[in-house]
Length: 376
Ligand code: FUB
Image (cartoon, rainbow, N blue to C red; front, side):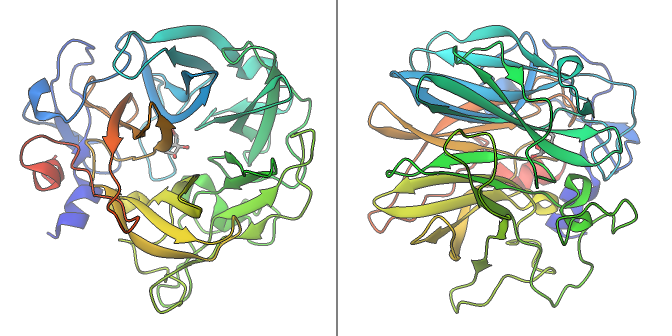
């Protein structure tokens, strides 16, 4: 079995849930557990930022010199694991804050609960946040009453919340994983999308097709499904335009193909700017890499450049990149505390650029690296 297939079908799930114990196990993708070896904390490159709740998909921002992290709040729900992520049953958000990297982390109270979002039914997945003119904006995906993912926005005067949701999702929004980038000229853009359970393939023309493909376009030799980008209005509450496809191309300018699972977009968009260039980064999903591509405009096209991080422990990988204290930081998540993909914990580690602007690939383990992770 290839390393990638091994990662796909043999991923961790816990036998006994305990925050203290690092009991590891593996399962096929439908959640049939087998016992696995336990990994000492010293094997991991960094340690969980929070240990009294499960957190994932960390979107980090620096406001007034302080670091705020907007993560998903993982819970142990009853739904069995499947390829559509039905086991990610999150119902609320809590914001994390810290004065410095490595310092104590404050966990905020509930910042937004699904019961207070009129249009949303369930599955509050990976959020992001933005700031403009004294207001903080929380962007979040959730399934509506018809089972379609939409993206909502909620506002607060405090970065920790509580946030008050708009009564309707953002008009023209669909799929998951919103990520909002504000350029030097003050214009904000939302990047979003995710295939498989993220439903991008069921929204080809912007209209949700409940009977669409469960995975992707199922056309390996055609361009892969592209993430989406749309400019936000001045009040940050709507799109100014119909979302456009974000092209990710190879070094010959050809779009990455659907069958190129090691490089094509799956979910977890993030945009940051470094030395005047736009860095679009994302997860390759079923091959478990954090990848990046560079462009000259927030709309792209972006040329694939490589991997930011090798596979972490757990099926999903989702990150953010932020500058703080004159250094660059990668926020990410794995399953160190629980051993279960549905119960993740966020982490942070430093990210390094080479003089030519490329990013050094990070190994999330101190020893043995991705090769070892693939066995789980
Ligand atoms: O946390 C739920 C989903 O899993 C996120 O939206 C994806 O990015 C993946 O991390």
